[in-house]
Amino acid sequence: MSEKLLPADLSFDGPFPRLSRRLRIGVVGGGRIAATQAMAARLSNHWEVVAGALSSDSDKAKARGAEWFLPEERCYSSFAEMAEAEAARPDGIDAVMITTPNHVHFDAARTFLDAGFDVICDKPLTNELTEAEELVRLVRDSGQVFAVCYAFAAFPMVRQARGMVKSGAIGKVNQVHVEFMQDWMMASGVTEAEHVKWRLDPAKSGATSTTGDIGTHAQQLASFVSGLELTNLRAEMHVCGEPKPLEDTVMMMTRYEGDVPGTLMATRYASGNRGGLRVRLYGSEGGIEWDLEKSDILKFSQFGEPDRILTRGQGGGIEPGVERYTRLARGFSEGVIEAWANLYTEFAMAVAARKDGVTPPDDWLDYPRVEHGAVGVRFVDAAVESHKAGGVWVACRREP
Image (cartoon, rainbow, N blue to C red):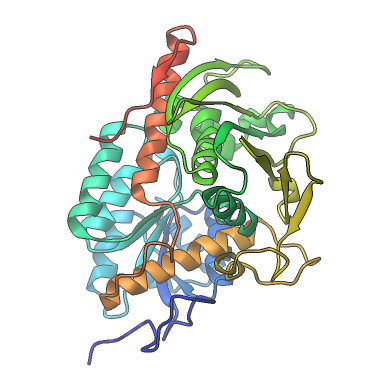
């Protein structure tokens, strides 16, 4: 009898089920975000990190792997080597996380998809739209699972906001405002740090820095919560701090389907802002607001009524489908690692369902798919096109 990962009495209501074993995941890329995501994958209790291509230098790959407690024979110096070797092992990885600089995403993702592995990839999905569309095609043809690391969409109160907007709690959405404000590029000499250099190198980061890195988070969050597709934008990119080859600030006017207007701003040069990701939606009957730095709460207003503050936890107005994303009771804060863990939990459920031949209901898993990653790449392309043309309105192209 073939291995079954999901329980025989699987219910799609209530908490996510315990799998019959932890899934095995490999890591491509050994930087800070890789360590963060590996920590979150372990926290989900659905994944074991068992292999890695953590450096292109063989000695460094093994040294880095030892720090992660990886067996020496599963410390690879290239993602191609890792994909081939793991595919040949009876205990090979079930999936791979790709946490490299942007320019490596496409080749690494394609290699692992071709080898039959499910993939979770950092954003932006790729630097080129043609590459993003190729990944969409590969995933659709293969039926494999491909998640994109828009982890902020996995906060419980973001899921609560999305559910309330969908149910009509604020009426018809008529404005969408989102911003991601940071200040870490204000530090003197920061552009010389290794983890910053590639973000300002067009050969690695693509045509943008801030827009592709954190602007895509803002774009995805706004569409995720509102349920509306971004259709048009006009953008201006700026270098507000010391000279850089790519922007540290972008400001946009936006339009969503139904001609709903909005704004989008992203910067790394806003003093006093560390994790300043904020989304505000206003509708015909009220509004809803969420702030990353106050991630456990959601502000909900209905016109003419006292404002309500909803808090993460069980009960208290929290939707039952959202409760499965909480680990602690109210008053005990959860943060970005837990949100990452929620994303890795959903990814695990999707991988297990594919392996077991189970088709979950549409409302069971809401993780960002490869198609959402392609939307992010089109968003970046449109922003660059608009900026170069002097801030004109540009359509965000739909997938063919």
